[in-house]
Structure formats: structure tokens, C-alpha cells
Image (cartoon, rainbow, N blue to C red; front, side, top):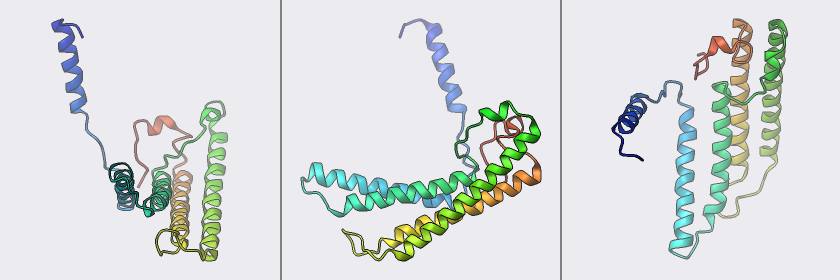
Length: 190
């Protein structure tokens, strides 16, 4: 970096602007704590695995399997959080080219398909959990607990998708149909 006073001033202004920005956590709800707790337990287990393997040179066998199941938990609980916030990825390019009534029809079809998809996967996950009789390899816990957790997450996604569908039908708008109405919005309608 140069010693020019103007460059230093520009940099200090830029840093001050970044310091003034605050993080908005107002869209977090109590179910999001599940994701946070699972994530930090996963981080601790992975750190323990790294420490025992590379520092102590004597790896704990259970850490790999438990880390795998915790990652599954973080993924599905996080997906439920994304459905609640209406933040799942979507292909929006077609919405720019079709008239508003067609966009509304497309959004309704997408919402109903999402509800059916999540409900179907919730049912299938519950069926799988009910049929699983195996125990985890490293600890004496049934594997079905993991599948029941996934089924519960899919059930939560189904309920959140139903709520989002109801909101979209009632208000006649959504993030995809009317992006200008939701500009700057980072949270779902509560």
C-alpha cells in the first residue's frame, strides 16, 4: 500500500463503514437453535477427532461415525430453517419473461409441489426409520434415531411449506412473483 494520506483516509472510511454495519438476527426463531447446537457439537467432535488422530496419534473410533450423523442433522435441520425463511434456491429467470398471472399460477404450482415433495419424503423417512433395526457401529444407539430426526425435519419442512403456500395465496405475492415488493427483505413473513 502506498504512503499517500488520501489512500489511508479512503481505507479508514471504508473500515468505519464496515464497522457501522450490524448483523440482523431478528429472523432467528427457537427451532434455529437446534441447528446452532448441532453445528457446535459437530465442530467439537471433528476437533476431537483431529486432535486424537494427529496430536495423540491414537484416534477415537466413534468420532467419525458420530460426526457423519451430526452432519446429517445439521443439513436437515438447516433445510427446515431455509424453508421457514423461504430461502431455498430457485430458478427465477422464467419469471422475468411471463405475465404476472402466469407467474402467480407457476408460484402456486411450485408451492403445492414443494408441499407434496416434503410430505412424501417425511412419510418415506418415517417408513425407513420404522424398519431400521440396526444399531450404530461405534456406540450402542439405534440408527433409527437419525432417520426419525430426518423424518421430523421433513415434517417441519412440510408445515413451513404449507404456511408459505398459504401466505403466497393470501397475499398474491412471493419472492419470485414480485421481487420488488420484497427488496431488501431477509426474513419470511410471520
